[in-house]
Image: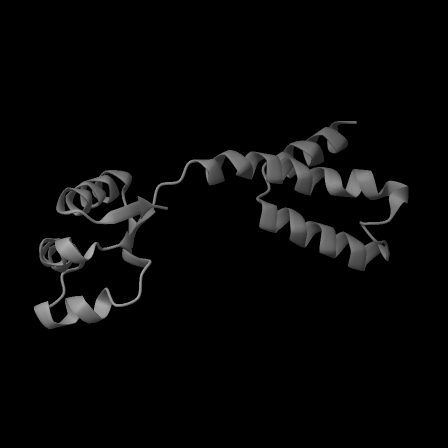
Length: 131
């Protein structure tokens, strides 16, 4: 029984990718189909456990995008200045950059940085969201 327990403990440490590779290898080696009802539940236990462990990591988002949704006509100049500053682009690029909205202004940034950029844009009159 100790061999079974050792294998079970090893399975608990597998990543989702490793568990998927393991299932493929077992299917190849033993000529079985992991999706088949007979024994399928046992074969799928490791990937399901790995997926459950991976789920909390997906909920904790660490990188965010600042999306510029709308620029009111009467606030263009002040918003353009903020866009130029945040996106670090030249004056002549701002109008082209904002010509089709919604558009991601900053991507893959920290929550704090995203909130600061959103606040600056909203203060200038833009409609913004963080995704």
